[in-house]
Image (cartoon, rainbow, N blue to C red; front, top):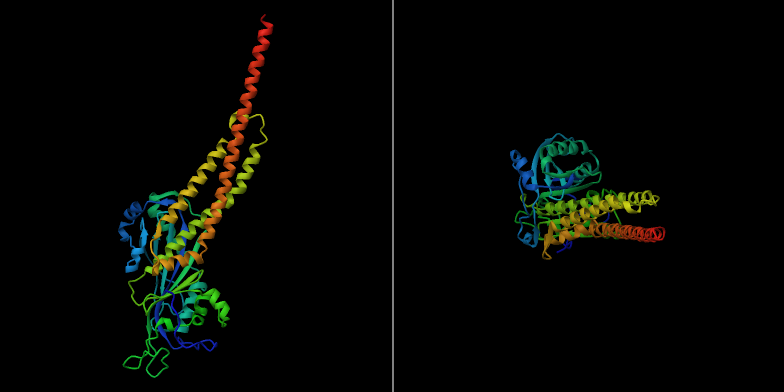
Length: 401
């Protein structure tokens, strides 16, 4: 369902595309996702947040029937924040979405001033993306939220790894005034041009999504902006590694953001456990080395604690990764499913999972080796003991004659 541009080609000069005189109504949502524990009891969390009217929403579009969510996350509004951003309209809205596999997605939604020219909206988006530090606001609201839901968090601990993402949302596109060029031949009765998103060229999104002010080559655009989707003539979704543009005229339809947020939550868990295993491997080697010099302790199961820890690590990692991947299932190849699949591809989800599997395989092999070594040592010790007992019995038999 990828959209194909039907507008006139750009001349290559900045600001010369079909969006040159377009005005838009929109916003930008900044996501920062935190791993706060091994898991979260969502029913208990919703009860603890009852005074804030939490919701457990699912994607609502018709094609969302192809998506299965076993345990829908809890969404809760957390208030507003005064943030100074050029062309922003009022205070920003702070909210959170809580996932059962231990992730809290903090969101700050910043409304742009209405009827902004495309160039001004692009500048607004760049200011939100890289021009303002929202970390203090995120961390303050996260601490307050965790204080409220702490009883629902299983093995609470905030991981050092976080995930950031920005979604630029356009709710309305104001047509070119009558008398302007009609790039697609769809002028209305009053001469206004509706400018469907299919006519928007990739080059026009480079300053917003890639923060590049110079025109890119055609090759660079194809490589950096390959994921473009449309379902209706008036919507558009473009994905990149760290942000996305969503053009959706229905304000209540936030399904694409929901899908992207879920994919980012899954990515965060893969990154957290990849980092955990990265740290565990050298620590495991050090523990093995420190255990081996004690040659006389063959009957004391010198690897027992290490083996138990390795077994617990493998069990926890395998359980959580499987829970993360099964939390969101796609059953058919339709619009939202394709966006979700493309997001996982951009985020390199398969590569993260493959890296985790390789490290878990090393730990399993180490566990098997140490267990075999411990069993061999115990068997050898028992054989020595049996030989000693037989020898002692023979010696006693000789002296007692």
